[in-house]
Length: 167
Image (cartoon, rainbow, N blue to C red; front, side, top):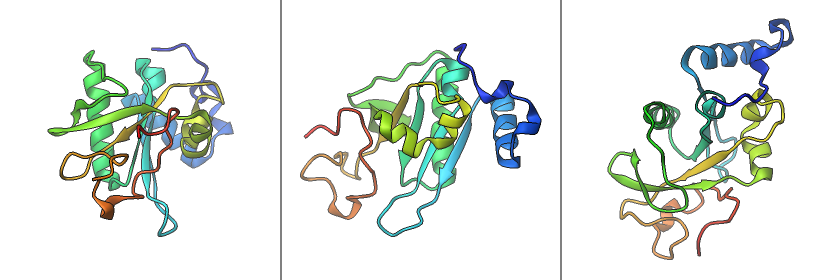
């Protein structure tokens, strides 16, 4: 557990109903998932965690274009595995997150953290925290940066990584 200041310590009267519910879930479960629906046909929905960094000292995670329930389950399984001491590799194919499929975990760029993980930024009071993007493959196991990636899935995962997707 990290000693970073969070809004958990703020007086409750300073919180909106949404914020109070979020803090209640983090206190009870150690984390919370925030799902952001797409408001355009060109931007995918996404879901991200808040609480991993505070509770486990592990990076927050974000995944694009998963239904809210699936994203919550995937993120929750990661939290549970990390609670038991499991560590996930970054910047290479990683198993154990999405069934039998490999995924990549790439560090999220600082400007993207501010844009996409807004509730986490609020929770951590603007202090820096680690975060990773879960990159999933198509049905053939090919990742979005590969020329043979399923063209019908292009654009469903926004590249918000610090290093940009491998080319």
